Length: 476
Image 1 (cartoon, one colour):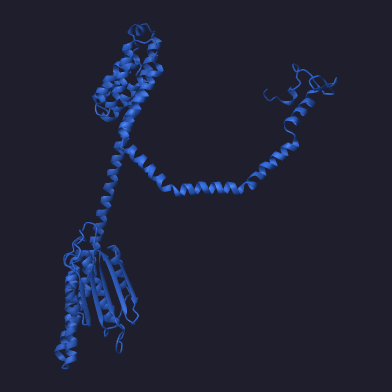
Image 2: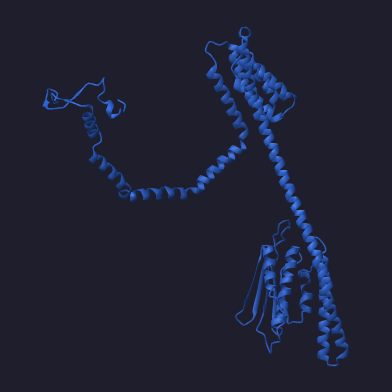
């Protein structure tokens, strides 16, 4: 019995309810006095939901989470642990399913289209229909398997089944595929006209000609709707794909333009740096070389003459490297010509004016040019630092070529004798070595040694993007 308001319990059509006072044969007690509708409603409400029981239910509902917090937490932890332990397999299964769907998206969509078309035919075809109608409808549905390769022929194959059968959905799918594959051309227009005629003309023709003009106008409106939906959807999908393709090309073009603009800015900056270095640094170094030459010609002390000769030689070497660096700055970033590498290491060691022991382990000829140039600059900067801070210390240079990397280690001992005044230093040498190594995927570490000296160690990988790795060195 549905819920009713209290004032409707004892309405005009409701019998009066008696109050139990005595027991009868069915173990029920009845009273002779009549009871009002409000009293009966109160009694029924109290029996169905007594206040005490309602309060007990509320208290039990409040106490349930606290009583079962431990089991609930344990169950949650088990579920979380299961998901955590099987996250990899579940993710792998999802990846395999996704890959399978991507690889077989075409055949699967064809099977789905055929299944929907057959379901449409089976649901609307009458039992007493002609045999040719079933055959034509089945042919129209099965022809959808070739809709991707021959969309116009498939649409023509669905016309008889659409006209004389019940394969309406098969014809709409064929028209959608034709609009998607051929966009707006004569085949699409012809297919749209055929589908509209099939939807407009009722089969058999005697039934069509017997319709009134109102029904024919209504059929024409529905024919236009049934034809326009798949046609518009196919054209929309094709337009969206073309728009995405154009946007992708636009993004690539914009990225290429930004790259060319960045290259132009870098080339301009490199040219400016080359000009500044040539105008300022080369002028100062040339003056140093000239002063050293004049000092060599005027002094008579052999030691002073030798020092002046060394200054002039180093100045001349600096000018040569400066000209090479200016040439590199004025060329493209990918041009490595003019930069010294490990093949020039022996000349660097002989001209540095320090007591250096050089040890080369491996073939340095096959090292990629960027790695070889970076290793050379590492040794050059380390020897420069030794000349500044410990010119009298013994220095050892180790270049070891391994299978995957080349290691450069420059170690100097404790300075001996009286230290010379500190030369100006910007503190950027070791930072530059670290940045140079990281750009090539390597590392650089500089730290004091136990004997009071200093050690600079750099490692460079031999495998660079676009540069073949050299063969492993052959040791006896």
